[in-house]
Length: 633
Ligand code: FUB
Ligand code: ZN
Image 1: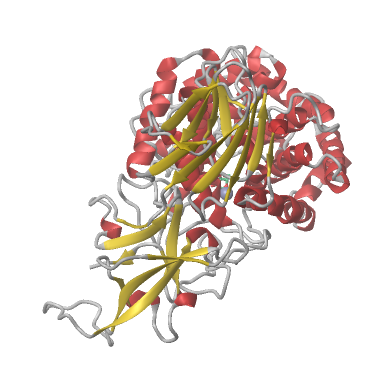
Image 2: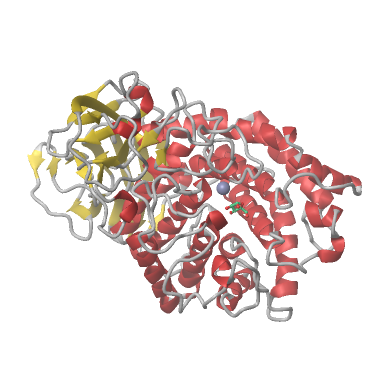
């Protein structure tokens, strides 16, 4: 392990920032906690699975053909990006498990392959090199050349920061390509932006790792050139590519969700490294649009399968939710950057929401099956044969962008828990972990999110410093003690703050009251009017067919919103550690007509006990209907 080990999106010392990320080697997740379980599963199952798939599905073979001098490309033209995301995940993982020989081998061999495939001038893209060398950089609207380059650069930054030996040669490959981009698209080249943003955030990260300012300037240039109509017009319209308005003027998040959110991650990176407060303000405005009216309760985004896109404000149908996994990950990445830039608790709140629900739900318990889209309802009779809305998680996809994206996120999960600033340490997410940063040591012990108690053993530093603890937005009641003495404090800007000398050590206990709750949506969300959802703490719950009595279709269930909810604890090692029990009725619709002209009578109804499970665990038993929003008349 190296000394540095900065994590993803680590701003330079000169950057505008309210919070500073911790070094990855200062934090360790305890496998006893939920985050630790997820990270271990990622290392043991998801990442090796992705590595295997790159070979089995012919993705790596494309690069081999280039290195060997030619041939025909197979698969999706931007599949190089899956190699790069897997490389990035492997690089981050090696920071935690530096003795993993198989991962080193994968990294070493792949980097050697990339170096062999790269052209003299730095160009690298196996599709264009084999099938269409004449179209190089000619069709930026859909070529994904800069998108792929961005993922390569992020892999190199990860390998560099994690100290993997392959980091040096990978950085050489990435910089040769980045230098080509600077020559081609920089101030002395042609104006151009990519149809799929991603290169912007990658170039800023490369600048952060190398100190080479032309990378930052190119990212800035590409952000500024967006919305100037450089991309050709097609039937999807410029808003799909976020090319309809300059970022600084855009009022609403639009179009393809992953494109929009990767762009916004890059926008924040550029803003903080160039000290551009107006640009950061634009990102904050677009955040209001995204999280004010275009985000599902699970944190998923994208309500249109067609175009994989944001819908209109409040257009959030649960059954047709697209909610791509990559979009959820992009939201997490964007919110992390906003949190660092501003310190605003709402960004940490959204990171929590999307992580525990949309992101966590994308991976099966096995770690080897994944959702691409993450709906909030699966109907009886659903046609799951289409890849972008299957009934169960699949082991891979024709467009496998999501699984390696999950792998790179979970490999760095420990990097997103806490930050520092001039006053001390801020803990944003609660899980079993040990945090060492400079003078601070905080040992966190908790069964969160199953249990409301978080115990922090704090020490370090003779001088007083402030430990800030986030009180999540969903939490309206908390209790805090230090060494058993109650501390009466209301959160200020979302955080409780304890300032003292911790030299002698102290035990802080934070209880975040977690009653089971019914949530309703804004009245404009027509798709779920008259419905309620069950939540507890950060977790959204859902009903699954598997928990209903035989012969009772999920569609016939109504929730009794006046009856109390019960929390049922099965133990941390149970497949479903905590379920919620609600009262409902079973309606007996018989065989009603699709539409009726007379008012419906009360009909027959019979009480039924409903057991809800955490949304992120759905689809791990027999395939069948599921719903988050339950009719609650
Ligand atoms: O176009 C590259 C990736 O494929 C996008 O980010 C995903 O939405 C999928 O379409
Ligand atoms: Zn994806």
